[in-house]
Amino acid sequence: MDMKQKNLERPANAEATPLVPPVDIVEDAEGILVTADLPGVAKEDVAVGVEGDTLTIEGVVSLGETASMQPVYAEIGVAQFRRSFVLSRDLDTARIQAQMKDGVLRLRVPKHEQAKPRRIEVRAE
Image 1: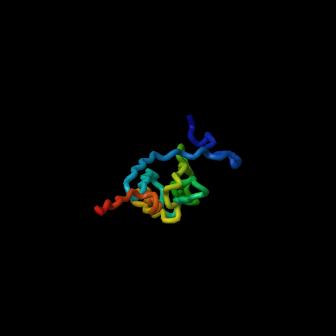
Image 2: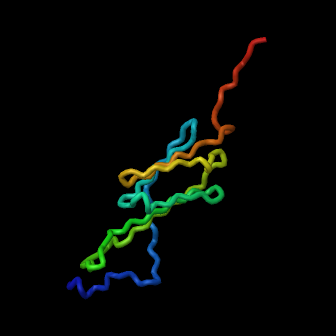
Image 3: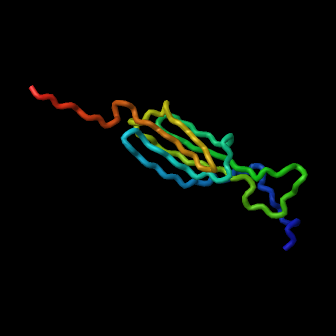
C-alpha cells in the first residue's frame, strides 16, 4: 500500500475521544493524593478544575510537527486525556496543590479541618 495515497488527516468536524489516564488515589488522615499518568503532556498543557464536587483532569499532547513536515503515517497525532471524579464533601477543594513531573501529575487534596481525625482528651475529675 502506498502511504501517500492514504488520507491521514482527521475530518475537521470529527472529535477525538479522550484517552482515560490511569490513576491511583491514596487516602491518609490529611486528605487524598491523586496520581495520574499523562505521558507526553507538558505542564502547560494540563488543566485541573473543580466544578461543584467534580474534579476534572485534562491534558493534550501533540507530536510537535513543524509546518515543513508531512506525516507519512500517523496513528497518534494529537492525544487528549480526560478523567473526572466526584469528591467527598470532606475535602477542601480550595486548597488543592498540583505538581507535574516526567508525565506524572500529582494532586494533593486536603481534608477540611473538621473532617480530619482528632483525639479527644479524657480528663480525670
